[in-house]
Length: 238
Image 1 (cartoon, rainbow, N blue to C red):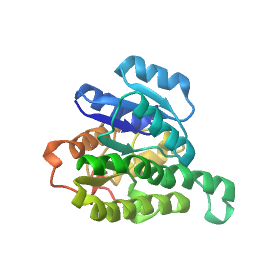
Image 2 (image 1 turned 60 degrees about the horizontal axis):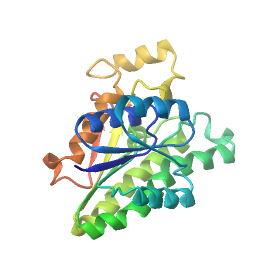
Image 3 (image 1 turned 135 degrees about the horizontal axis):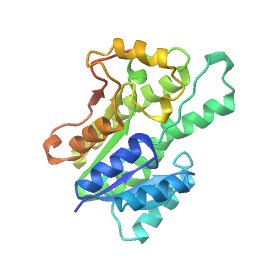
């Protein structure tokens, strides 16, 4: 039985991944930052093991690694999903808000990979899946910092895959389009209708769509896939 660590697991894509991997027989270590109520509900539903930590803080990530090891777990699959939205004109975004977003969306992935990669290299086996965004591929007006962070996650994925492939570790990236989660709750009905009209599959994505893609990339069927960006966007590119 393999063990997966999922960051940002208490809601949206992270919660869907937790459910999917639990159903597939993985031991699921579900990381979250602050929503105790949602995390406990997820644990009751899926049987996951909860770990509270801010992945944007490297000291907390190393403490998380040590606690997981002390509990007898070894991470086979790491899903760097933790993320927050940031909307507004680039020149008007307060620097503190931008820095907080980068800590979670970019440095969260870097921190967790830095902490858990050594054990994968030692085993000559492991899988890292980073969750980026369509905006990391094409950019979005009024989401410049967010797009920049997600583009960096894509670059990180491609570079790390080349570095650790010789050690038996695969690194891939998921690039969701517009997914029906609370991160996109700012969209009006009119916005959603306009977007759906431009999506070839004529619907918003579901968190479960992304979770299914993550499950594929983690499995043996993707054993010769690394350094790739898998779009889950219904054929839409913004």
